Amino acid sequence: MTTATPSTATTTTPPTPATTSLPADHRSPAPFGRALCAMVTPFTQSGALDPDGAQRLADRLVTGGCDGLVLSGTTGESPTTTDAEKAALVAAVREAVGDRAALVAGVGTADTRHTVELARAAEKAGADGLLVVAPYYSRPPQDAVEAHFREIADASGLPLVLYDIPGRTGTRIEPATLVRLSGHPRIVAVKDCAYDLLGTQQVLSRTDLAYYAGCDEQILALYAIGAAGYVGTVANVAPELFRAVLDAFDAGDTGRAALLQRRALPLVESMMAAGLPGTVTAKALLGALGLPAGPVRAPLRCADRATTEALLRTYGELAAGTRQLQV
Image (tube, rainbow, N blue to C red; front, top):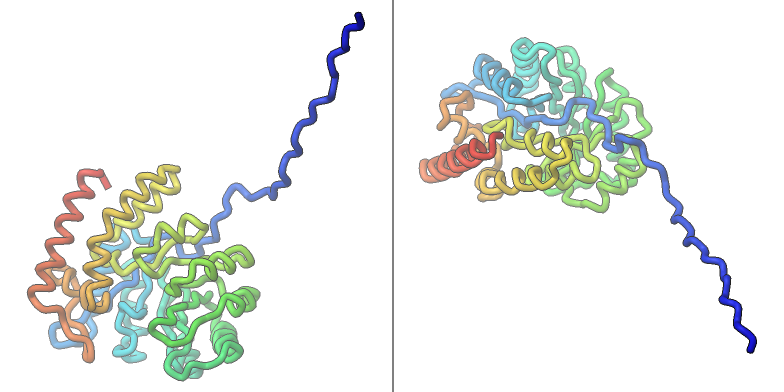
């Protein structure tokens, strides 16, 4: 009887899938830090610019954890402040914070020539960077949008943050336009309020532009895919809140980061999604807390008592909860 010889077939190891090596730090650069506040512009009760109040508020925000301050943005009521007030605000805040924080000055308008003038004035006043929104109302095509940003970038020595917020301007800065603009040495960042996660990732994957989340509810989501940080409105009243989210994520505690982001949601909703601009709610809450703010300028109107009381309740509940979490 012949005994069959066991098969000696060779066992092959499945091929290892091809991988692309990623650098240890795949996050976009943070030219102005991670945690930025879109600071309100304090006014006196008569409606005049309040430089002293701006200095006190700026000092509190930086002491509370803000790496940078964005002045004269949407939250800073840029449509209703004069050119001279914008420059005076930068100079006052620079005096207050020194080199402890980066200052980004909002200079965007619907007029390229006017924006160039504001950019040069902000540089002279002591700004570290410029926030430039897409031209609004006239709705220029993308080649004109690109030319607008290039002219401003060529007009001063400061780096630019391009502000993409089509819900307000009516004009998107398309991802392809951002990719082209990324080649300019002074166009370094984007404040992202486009609500286009796919487009954001397309630009992040093809450029070195620093992305800053401009919508508080998206801070963790954008940070998780490589954004540099945020420019927040809620930071006016709680500067440490979202910085703690980023710190937890950077420490590898993604569960805690998600918990902190969710804990912030009621305040984000009450300040940003309650039918009033964030400027109005931020100033109402700051005033109720005894902090510099003052009224808003027309056509905006100050929050009524019921709204302010509701904001205070939500803020108090959040403060109690974050104390328990040792934030």
